[in-house]
Structure formats: structure tokens, C-alpha cells
Length: 157
Ligand code: IDP
Ligand code: MG
Image 1 (cartoon, rainbow, N blue to C red):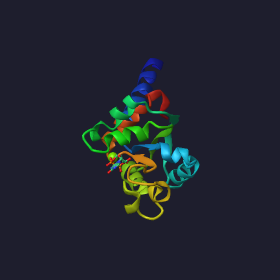
Image 2 (tube, rainbow, N blue to C red; image 1 turned 120 degrees about the vertical axis):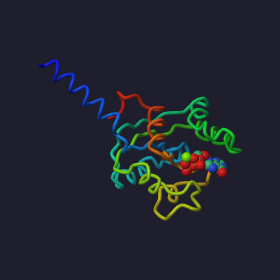
Image 3 (spheres, rainbow, N blue to C red; image 1 turned 90 degrees about the vertical axis):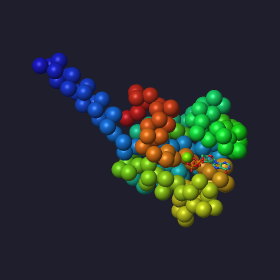
Image 4 (spheres, protein in one colour; image 1 turned 60 degrees about the horizontal axis):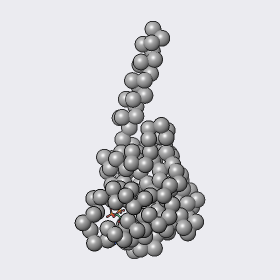
């Protein structure tokens, strides 16, 4: 009986982990870290109702950045993007909330801060379309891929 209960608990835990799609992935990018905006940006994220499921300060290698942004490898700005994302530490995090992906994209604002809505993180803290302070996943599928790129299951809560 104890063994059965144990197995059920493991099953429930796996089921819970696999079925959760109300998550997104973010990076506070090197420009925002350099300028000392980590605290202010985390405050915005908290106030918007996101729960932190995983978080760390980390420094992407060139290989990491090329892999993470592989979808953009044919774009003219790819080299610039890899240079930027590897020039200093970032804060990587997995965030949880209902409708996380869409709500987080709304919170960060448009890719180009000139087009971002008032009060969004990019409007407040981004310098340009290239150095735009923060990343947010664009789909549930990419949120899961990007989160797994930076965090193991053990480091996600
Ligand atoms: P997103 O971050 O809003 O999803 P994407 O189009 O996926 O925007 O581009 C990924 C990242 O590449 C941007 O956040 C930005 O740092 C960089 N980037 C996008 N477009 C340009 C550009 O035209 N010039 C320079 N960098 C760019
Ligand atoms: Mg994108």
C-alpha cells in the first residue's frame, strides 16, 4: 500500500510538471543588468502577478547565444545580437501565471522601444531595437524549450 501511494505521488508530480503550460521564459538582458535595472524590472514582474518558478544570474557563451537565437541566424543583425547577449551577465527566469506568454509580451512591450506602449518594461528601460532590455517567449512551445535550455527540472519549482 505504501509502495502504491509512493508511485501515485510520483505519477502526480510528473503529470503536474508536464501538463503545466501557464509558464513563460524571460531574460533580463546585459544592457539592463549593466544599468542596474534588475530590481526595478523584477518589481514590475512581481506586481503584474507572475510567480518565479526558476531564476539565476548567468553569462551566455557565444555557443549558447547562437543556439538560443538559432531561429534568427539568417537575419542581418544575428552577429550583433550574439555579441550583445554575451557581453555580460543576464538574469534568466521561468515565470508562472495564467496566460503567461501573452501577458508577459504585453508587460514587456514591442521589440522596438520606440513602438512600445507607455509603462512597458521596454518603454521604460530599453535603449533601441537591438538593446531592448528583456526577452519574453513568443509561444508556450518556445517557453518550454527556452526554459529547459537554462534550467533543469531540479532547479524549477
Ligand atoms: P522579440 O525579442 O521581441 O521576440 P525578435 O524579433 O524575436 O524580437 O528578435 C529577437 C531579438 O533580436 C530582439 O529582442 C532584439 O534584441 C534583436 N533584434 C530584433 N530585431 C532587430 C533589429 O532589427 N536590429 C538589431 N537587433 C534586433
Ligand atoms: Mg522573439
